[in-house]
Length: 259
Ligand SMILES: [Zn+2]
Image (cartoon, rainbow, N blue to C red; front, top):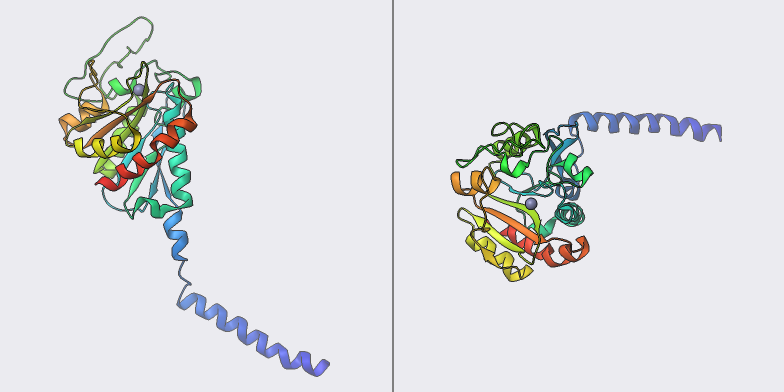
């Protein structure tokens, strides 16, 4: 017995030595599966109240499709969609067809936590972009004005501008909700074909004009001023997140693959 122990000892030392050496010379490659399914999370900034604003990136690559929810904090089903989409792609990234995609689950985290449209300053972030038609609207209710004291006055808007600068997205899908059966695939810039593909799957009409002025909106800044294809997906207000997801899951995947 003693002989056996002595006989094994040098061998075990040798094995340890070889393992250590090979680790130094050639590190084991990460499994491919892990690289495909583990998204990269990128910090973009913070809300007025210090909540992080982050993008979850799948199939890391140049010019991802940028998808965002909750720029209006009271449109909570939009966040159900971005959350579900992140979970879906974590589970099976092959659904994106190898296309890069960056998802901002909640663009206005303070508004989302308070279930209100505006950020903590009372500013409508989708009117705070430095678009050609930006204007301030001072109201006594919001000390900073409903559209902000100036374009990009709000940290959340600046986080989204940072996303645009970092990602240079090939397509943007911003998810909202709207009342009175006006749900739609609203497009700005060269994105009619994408809106049509999404419409074929979610059944909402394609429109190029929401029908009321939207000064300082992301759609104007990105789609009209900069000609970045942009879809404003308007879900039916008051519907359930589960229903909105089942209706739009394939439309969002089609949007990702469209460009
Ligand atoms: Zn909205």
